[in-house]
Each structure stands twice: as structure tokens, then as C-alpha cells.
Picture 1 (cartoon, rainbow, N blue to C red):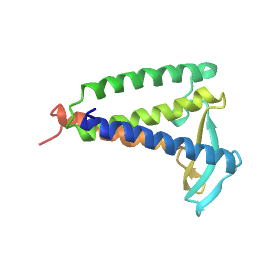
Picture 2: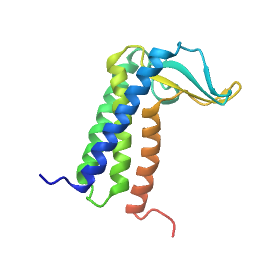
Picture 3: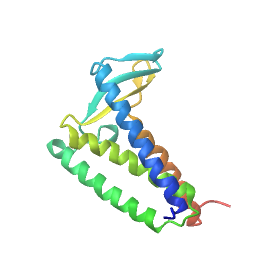
Length: 162
């Protein structure tokens, strides 16, 4: 059976990111105390176990957040899979970006299905009381993938400045 070149990038990226995300979240839940920071690199980089029942940056839809955000994630994944299927075999960076975003969305979706507490977040970066939102490996995949995807789509649509 011949495997398409884009599949050699897409499926391993999804598998590896999901594995890393699920493993690190499991470790965080088993070794960290909720809301108690553990310093890793001074006060700048720490692990703080937190549960986010909403979406990125604390976005919430009230008591229906879990269902609404899960449905949005499922639609997002379906659209991204459609984009993957329409991608050419030579679109390595686009396929990589799609894989990262899909894996990140699936990683956080698994948390929403698994627990009413919400998505497990544990990476805590900042200085003193000035902190970035606590996040996880799936969030990194979504963010990096979205930036790569925007860049790739802008190139393919001729939107970049010359």
C-alpha cells in the first residue's frame, strides 16, 4: 500500500502531539496540586495545575460552555480535515499546520469529554503577579499550527507583500 507524502507528515504529527498532550496532562494531574505553583525556572516558568471549563483566555458560555465549545471543536476539526484532504501532496507546511491544530483541538476535546472540570492546563509563564494564561501542550499545537496555517494560506492566496 502506497502512503501519500502528506499522510507521512499529517498522521505522525497528530499522533505525537496527542500522545505528548495526554501524557503531560496525566503527569500534571498525578503530581501537581491544583492551583499551587511549582517553580521550574524561578518564578518565570512554573507548573500550576488548573482546570479550564471554558475556552482559550477564559472565554465562557456559562453553564453550557462544555457542550458549545465541544461542538465548535468538532466542526473545526471537520473543516480542517476537509482542508487536509484538499491539500496537495507537496504542501508539507500546510499539512503540518493542519495536523498541529487538529491534534491540539482533539487533545482539549478529550479533556472536555473526560471531565466536567474542563481542560487540564499546567504551563504557567510570567513574572511575579504578571502571568500569561495557564496553558498546555495542545494549546501550543493549536497556536503554532494556526500561525503556520495563516502563513501558508496567505502565501497560496497571494496575500503576502512583495
